[in-house]
Image (cartoon, one colour):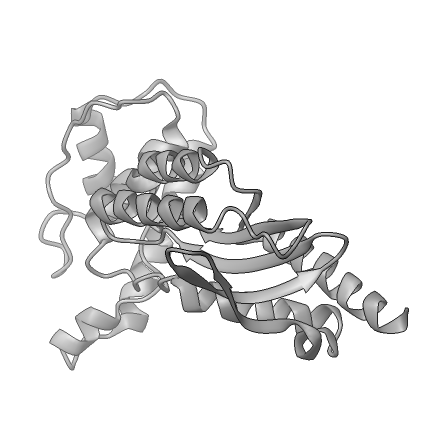
Length: 249
């Protein structure tokens, strides 16, 4: 058994001005403690009736307070991973009261790169080239930054933290198109396109995200894909190192 509840009930407070979040959390914390104690005793998996009895006898008697548990429900699990199942049900039932995760758009990735550069070496953020345009006979593409370490690296943020599969697919196809168009930079012998990407916040979109990465990788343009998180940290540190090293030569 597992007893979970949100960290914040801000939306309920907004609906009911006299609502006591502190008192509710006292009850919920006590329920969680009792469930944890019950789990410490090795027992067979309870039936639905036994589960109902445990709730009414050990947690909250029927009509004891204004708080009430709804009737237990059975569901089919699509995986044997009980942790994943619990997380998915938690997300489903408490989506309305959870704080929305911060959207990681292209601007977020640009800010992250700049901040990480400055953290690695304060002078590096000032040395990197900004808004570098790469033209060809048909179009031109503006890159967020550029730096050099043997190759000339054009940096562009491409976030896939979008709301539906269609948007993810459309953005990946669009980026594949301009990568092909500017894939040859005749005035530079050794270059690479460094793409800073962020995955979708919604886990159900990860399959479409993987397809988007495959679409980007399908172009013959020289490139490197850097994912937001530890990969971006290490990439930014590498860029900062070469930017500072270049000023010392």
